[in-house]
Every structure is written in structure tokens, then in C-alpha cells.
Image (cartoon, rainbow, N blue to C red; front, side, top):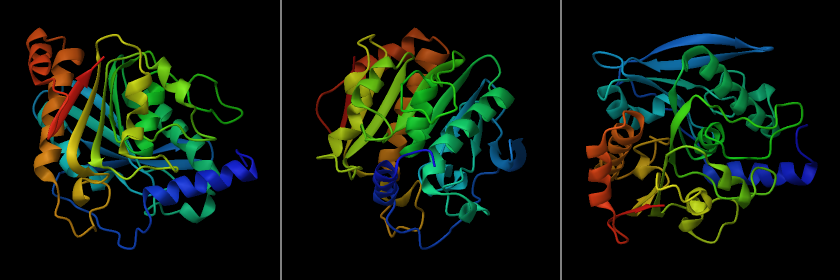
Length: 295
């Protein structure tokens, strides 16, 4: 066991609060992808790959939300592919669609996620890549960008990767006992976009949706950390990502707004285009429906 019994119970409640019921398993094949299986210690890691359209300009490594699966994020991934990125995403062991999910306990998921992301980085990251994730997966991505979470025993204390050029973190969890302390977010070392919405149900007993901004609030004021808050947007964009079985309506227009801003982030901080940063600056606003902040 990686956590004490009390922390394991808290962790279990966290996962259940992220997704109460995954009663329907739906695969959407609107976006072409392929799969490859990598080996890690005594288990296999199945990886989904979306090939960049045209010339490949970069790589994004993506970590899905708790209990979800890579193919449930097509609407989020498609704009990256169109922008010239090849995207790789592992099927984590906590997924309800993992073929051997019954072999693993809840307390094993965090270590496995860190291992999965490092495996992808070593296999596909090359000299430079973008780390991205949603919900639980957003924390996985933030850790690769320097955030100091609570690392399971036996692993390297720092899981940061100097090859990470930037982080795209969609609805990351707030500070949580046994997972990350609030101060741990203060070590974010790369440009980052942190996203949430005013209907984004808080996790782990946090008071309101704004707890998802812990990573932004604690980030160093280096002028390359951004937070986007979308009015009335929930944790799943109405089922557009992570939980396609939800009745909706899917918040596709709001998801596109997020994707457009992430595209500017990529152009500005991955490709170092000053005009993209200027466009981001012009969009800064403390008020909705799309509030954008920078520090």
C-alpha cells in the first residue's frame, strides 16, 4: 500500500468525487488514432496516438481524468492535431475501461500515473514536449512541469522533467491530503494555462469551483502563467470530454474558446511568437463569460 489507511480513504473519496458513476463505456472514433503497447515493469501500458496533420511541429503528452480514457477527449485533442502536434495518451490503471483494472487498488493509481507519464516522456518526448491533462491528469502534467506533489515511496522525489516546455492543465485538483499540499504548486517552473469553470464541481471537499485555481494562485509571478474561467462551464464541458455518456448539452462553444486560448499559449510560449502573446494580452479580462488572468 502506498498510503496509510486514512489517506487511502481520502484518496478513494477524491476519485469518487471526480466521477460518481461511469455506468456507460462509450468509445468515440470521430478522430483517427492508433494504439501501441509499451512495457513498464510488470505491466503493459496501452498508448493512444493521434498523428499531427501535415508536418509534425511538436509532441503533446496527455493524461486523462480519473476513471476516464484517452479516446473520450477527441474534441480537446483535435485542435492540437490540427495545429501540428502528435498527441500521445496512456490508458491509466484507474480507468473503468482498463482491461486489468481489478488487479489494482485505488492507492496504486498515483504512482502508476507518474510512471506512465515518465514512460511516455522517455519514449516520445524527444528533446522538448508539452505536458497536458484533465482533472487528475492535470496534476500529472503539472508535476512534470515542476509542481511538487506527494510522491510515493521508492520513486524519485522530484518528478519534474526539464524537457517540458509548458503545461496545459484543465480543471486540476486543488490541494488535497495525501496527494498535494497547496505550497507544492508554488514550484511550477514552466509557462502554464490553468482552466476551470464556475460550475466546475470542487473535489476533495473544497469550498467552491475556485479551488481548481490553486495551481494558478500559488504559481510564481513570472508573467507566463494564465488562468481561464468560463461562466457556467462544468468539469466535463457538459460531457464533451471525459464523460461522453452525460446527457449534455455539450458545451462545445466553451471548449472551443479554451482550445483557441491554448493555441495562442502554444504559439506564444512553445513557438515563441510575440504576436500570440500580444493576442493573449488583449484577451485579459477579470470578468466572464471568459475571464483570463495572467501572473
